[in-house]
Image 1 (tube, rainbow, N blue to C red):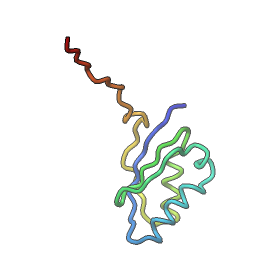
Image 2 (cartoon, helix red, strand yellow):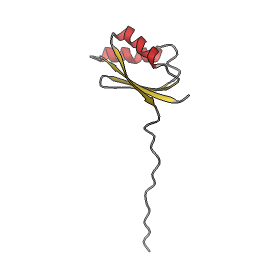
Image 3 (spheres, rainbow, N blue to C red):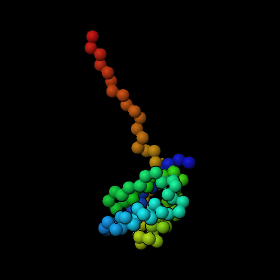
Image 4 (cartoon, helix red, strand yellow):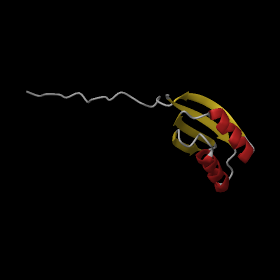
Length: 92
């Protein structure tokens, strides 16, 4: 399976809601084993994982938080850039 990245929009007004959202992602059945990275960026929760079910996670967040919207799903390897070596000058 390939890595996939999905972005969820949540209403995160205070620290308790942020903590509750991260705890829900970490403890949802079938999700924890595949999640390699999760972070909060403002009101967006970005989850990168292998074999994760984004629809099930969105449903669980809606039950716990009241509002969750799945914004995008993409491959998780989009930030990998090729290694660039600097050009070496030789002065003779």
